[in-house]
Structure formats: C-alpha cells, structure tokens
Length: 472
Ligand SMILES: [Fe+2]
Image (cartoon, rainbow, N blue to C red; front, side):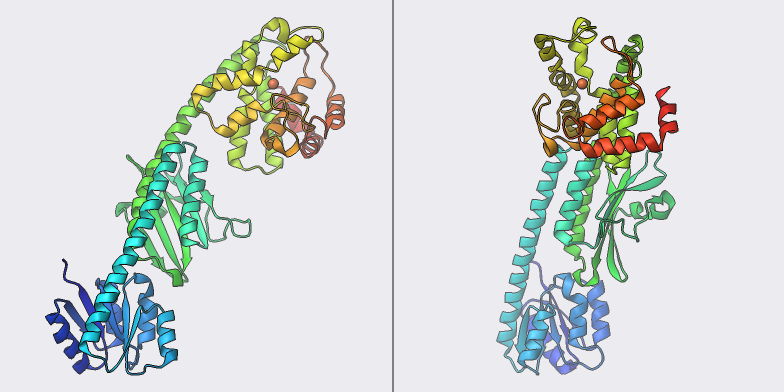
C-alpha cells in the first residue's frame, strides 16, 4: 500500500516534532508547518492524504486555513487545546472531518488518522462511482442522441444537476472554425446572462485547447472552462461559473476532463449526422422543386409555405432550432402526395369519400418515405400532423388544441394560405382579403387562433415585403 502523506499544522515546533516522530514510526510521510500562510502555500502545491490542524495560531488561524482547503476533499482533523462546543461545531461546519482536544494520547491520534483516511477513501470511492454512473449515462445519451440541440440540452442538464452553476454555456466552433458561437446556455431570469458573449474569436480562446486541460480561474466566482475536442479537431468549449464556496476539486476536474472527451465526440457525431441529414433534405428539396416546377398549380408552393411559416415562427419567437425544423417540414410535409394519382390530386370536381380517404393517407406516406433518412423526430411530427384541426376533426390522429405540435399548427396556416391564394384545378385563386377572411373564419375550428392572428398581423404590417417574396 502507498505510504500516506500527513501534513501537521501547529505553531508549536515541539508539538509538530513529537507528532512527526511518532507518525514516521507508524509508517507515514510527515510534513510540518508552524505558520498559517506557509501551510496554505504547501496545501496548494502538494497533495496530502490528511491534515492535522491547530485552530489557535498567531496570524492566519486554523479556521482561515480550513476555509481555503475545504473543497480539496482532504480530511482535516482539528487539534486544539480549546475544546469548546462552539469551536467544535464551527470547525465541523467549516469542513473539518474530526476534532481532537489536547491533551490526547498518541494512540488516539493514530486511530483518528486511520479512521479519517478510511472515511475519505470511502467518500472518494462513492464520488468516483457517482461520476462513473454519470459518464455511463452520458455514453448512452451520446449513442442515442444524434440531434445536436437535444444532445446539448442533455449535457447542460447533467452539468447543472451536478454543480448547480450560476452560469452554464456551451460554445461550438462555427463552420469556418474561426469563431466559437454560443449554442446553449442556462438563462438567468429567462435572459442571456450579461457576462456571456454571443461568440468568441478563435484567437481569444485558442489557448484552452493547447493544454487540453480544464481551466479553473478564481475571481468573484469559480470560473471553469472545459475544452471540447473531437477525434479530429476542436469542437468548442463548455463554461460554468459556480460560487467560490463550491470550489471544484481535483477529482471533479478529472471527471470533467473525461466528460469533455465524450461530449466532444458526441457533438462531432451529431454535427456529422446533421450534415448527412441536411444533404438528404437538400436532395429532396430539389426533387420537390423540380416536381413542382412541372406543375403550374403547385409551382413554388413549398418555397412559399416555408417562407410564410418562418415569418410566423420568427414573430412567435420559437427559437432557431424550431425555425430549422419548421423550414425543413415546410418542404417535406406533402412528400407523401407523390404516391397519390394525379386523377385524384388534380381532380377538377369535388372528391368522393373514397378519394378523400386516399388523400388522408398522404401524411402516412410522407413519414414512410422519410423514415429511412433518420430525420429529427420533431420534423417527422410536424409533417405527420399538419392536417390536424384544433377542434379535433382533422387527420391523421384527430388531435385537439394543444395536443397538436405548435409547429404543425403554424405550417397548417401557411400551407392553407399559400394554397388559397393560388390557382388550383378545382377552383380559382382567392384574393388575399378572401384568404385572410377564410383564415379568420376557421380560427378555433381548423386553425390555432394565435397563429392566425400572428399571420394576419404580419401580412398587414409587412404587406410589401411578403408580396415581393411570393414572386420568387
Ligand atoms: Fe398536406
């Protein structure tokens, strides 16, 4: 077994000499300090398995030393001639693990050291197991989550559960690699914390990657920067701020380094998945564009739906992740119609019951086509539910009100408006005013009223701009 390292801090050299002689005989490495500041320096620069600390010392006293080392995870046994209950309580509250009142026998000292080292080993074993569990859990999440935003949400949740940080943020390298952009953070009172810049230039933070180590800076708070590195390159970094009192121990830093390795690889995978997904979506988009271009009735329909959906989404403040989902779903939502005969799809007269049933199958066909492409769950859900009605009379699931995803409700309004103002084989195009009146009439029946109101407001406020884009 390793020889344990004991630090004795007491202002009386006779006492430290006595303990040293005894403890060396017991098989310990023993180090002595007779002055507080010297002890703090020694504790900051060396590793000890246990500290014996006198409370009453001239200059820097035992309590000050205790407050400086409480988060290092080293057991501290207080040795004092002033064995009052107040002192004992204060010492234990300040992080001491045991309390010996002078005079005590050398045997008592030996027992206290053994007991506290054993307890400390057990505590760090528990900590290690807890961290191991977190790392295994993270592994499982990384394997199962290929969506970057969901992965970052999980990572920030895990870190928040462990450290309850005042600030937690993840910055990811931009495509060109010259900037690190804020991708996820814990908002303070629903706002971006003032201290968090939206982006960093590589030159500002590049140094954190050179040593590949977790960087801990102590100012008003304890600021921890954790570099995230993938298999090939720097991915970004995670930044947390915890109060000084909750100082991050060496053991936790080791954990964060392993954690960061996994997170880096997970993010790298998710970014790759996103690139593959986007290239699928782009391929499908150009397929849809070329199909629509052939048909004078549906020409630019999906572009128009995407445009209107995004206007509504932005106005409703749905965030960048949801805007991306909405954009992709706007292009993909009617893909299933490819499987429906033109004789039904372009029929000039009203559809009979059987034909209507066939039309109602298109959301199923859409997701069947998209299934092998491993799109985001939200994108699939929006495509699947874009014909639901808030009164529950829509299809395919007959969802009502808030059961329908908000993005599907936005898409439904954009889709209906775009269809209404364009010429169809079975009816003439409506004027914008007629289409707006129809949206209003169907609010709370077919469409979500908030979405309709938002859209009508946008159309009225922004008429020129919206009309301009329709000609694209
Ligand atoms: Fe549809």
